[in-house]
Image (cartoon, rainbow over all chains, first blue to last red; front, side, top):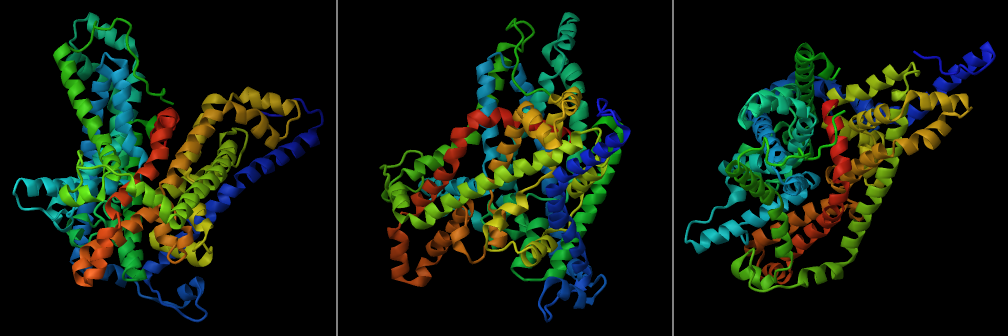
Length: 321
Length: 311
């Protein structure tokens, strides 16, 4: 720690000014800290909802209801696990996320390497800009893009099917197509972002490494294998592990908006996040939805801690904490 | 901190480059994916200029039978609800961005000051919320019933005012662009803490502020989830994105159930340029982003690159 006020003459004023400085700096952080306490830490007390049979009492305020509601232990969790849907919902969440992670990684690294090898700087810039564009749009907008192609009444694909004399597929009623569609939608929106990240890492590699390899007679492919990929290794592993740490959290907008909230698609589009929302908003079951949410948060927390421990063992500088 | 990605070229162009056929393949793959990324938007633009007659005849098509600006004319005529939503989106984006940038800077600055002993506490306070939370339902109930975030603008702004992710981005910008000596010199010259932050540090860290502001503005502009949660009755407050979401359901409801509702409803469904109208709305939402995008892309890339590595 550095002494910050070497110029001040008197000792007591030095201490006074230190305290004053700490107070002023703390006052800067105060609005953010207040926000965190009210919007992030206060709701953590709501976790008890998962263990309560929450109902309305008089006076009907949140704290009063929470206090007076009966403790039911793990009943809400029992209900949750007795439901035949729960296994499928967790399975959907894990499988989709795993697919997103693996495909996202492989394709983005490949694209980044390709972009870096292009001789035309203008072309590379253009591709990068076009690819990154969907990242800035919302899932609501994206859902309309897909609708333009698949809409049963006027969508392009059903119309082409009609013209070709084939049976028209009712996409928004046919769950079997949605794994492919959701994976495609996710890649469409996020590949550009990951590509830009990996490209940043590749452009950061010292050119001398490639020149040395070339002088030693390494072909371009050998350079990619022995220079580019080893240089990216740390970043790939870290992003991979961190994403695995978030494997229980699904992208709500993707799974809710893109299938247009269609009930007949739940078997392949329902994930933990949409389940929690629908269980609360549509059925009003505070207990079950809180239990599902808590389960997700606790498992997610354990996953992130585990992931971070692995990262720290692998490369201490890159760990989150 | 990683450098801002830019595709740097070695000066000798063909030396140590992939072979020409391979590069052609690369071009093909990248071009295909690039088109995949932007063609849906172009398609929606085309549909928004397609006449309702053409949509009835051949559906949505890249080459419609006839063009029409009817959808846009209608958008401007239905006025109220739409302009209201446009205003709401702009208002929420402007106020939300201004406040959140201020809060982020104010929170990140003490975290960056090595001589601020309590910085570890504030750091942890922010960081812990990245890995654990109360969950959707408790957060929703607290915000709605305890904090009064319901049916008002605050409900659309406050929940997104602060993000630990942005604090990390801002702190990293401070660490890389503001030398400790600058602050020491300012202190010796008798500059107060707030004066130092706003008069001396802020001008140096402008790129960081721009990055965080852009990320926030995008997040607010694209926001629909908060409206879905907290705006159930007061339709005066709905932002554009949520209006679009609601329109989808209403129009679809009419279209899907017109045979059940009888001839009158079917007539309504047919006469409204509902198909091209929706797509015109999508275009009006995306156009501000598409226009600004080439200019802010650099900043956002810089911010996201920082955030992904430590965050």
